[in-house]
Image 1 (cartoon, rainbow, N blue to C red):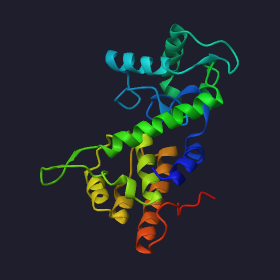
Image 2: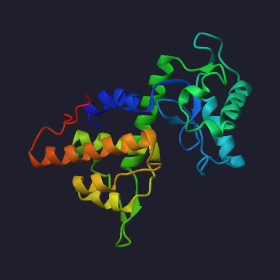
Image 3: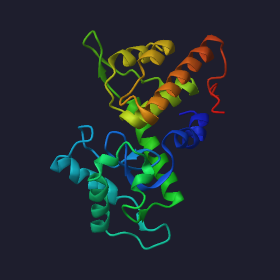
Length: 232
């Protein structure tokens, strides 16, 4: 990815997701933390996970360096499991804000742990989406993001932003086709991810703006290494 994308990644996402050192439920009812990072494989919105999804979600949570309080001792696996279950049970709070979950558990991530977690996930996301294979309308297998490295910085930021919410395997065939032909205005139309409400709705609007900027960058032969987008 472009250096400009990596540089803006944290402030871009913190403005949308906040910077949260505890576990909370996002708008879909998924246990999440940090800067909109899900720790939950539950498929159905506000639903109950299957046994397999619960096990995978707990395993993902245990990989993080949770502490009892920011400066307290590291949490044990049973403590982490209990915190995850406590948060998951409060699905009635899922759309009432992250702070509703602050006092449910005492587990916290340090600032450094949050930064490492965010950029580790960003790097994994880039790798996965660049290798993404989809079935084109012709029936042939296509790699719509194969030339991601040559995209304008604004388009890169928009795609990674979509993946941050929907994951790199999101299913938007018209978007895939538009991205493959570098039709940034069509990408702006087709880039909406669900649920289109709250922070996700604000993200969708920013992503649309970014793809429009990508169109202008290529139309006017501007520097693709720099972002035309200005968050101010």
